[in-house]
Length: 246
Image: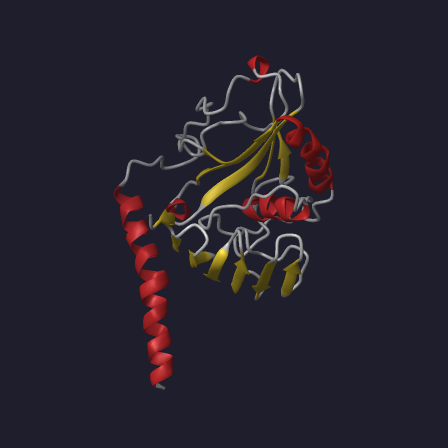
């Protein structure tokens, strides 16, 4: 009985407290009330495509809308072939056919929130990754109308995380506030990625853990992620994200 009480206190302190604080801060913040009031225009985070001839790959993320923005980001992929005059954006939305190409500006705001670059690759490495990423996108299994599930997934972050895991040569992973990234798209409850040296255990996206040199040690519960990365000395706080200890 004492163990259960201690476990409950730990869950409240580690997961419930920061997410409640984040929700309170979000509630009093200046956020659009609906998607109609939101700004979806380019935030001009990326270079002008026509002025940058080299191939490039970007992983982008921005806080999402509504109260879920207090705990989660929306993520997407941006590709650009060598010499291309425009970017190619891929993300998943919760209405209609989920997988969308160029539905928004490559660096467009998401519910008025300015996006950030999570990871980027340029030059020859990007040119090698682009066809692999396109192949993974085309093979994404939850691409039909009605496949989207906001929680535990598959959602927009499940899509990007799955594509990234299907291309292990791209050493990138979504931030811990990308709720849905840990949903097991292949249905596996436990996997070991030999190329990444990463162990993943997931109870259908509701709870799980990740252990590896890129992720460190993470525990996820109802989409919220807490963890520590001893390799770069950082902690992961539910709803807030990663913070360096150095």
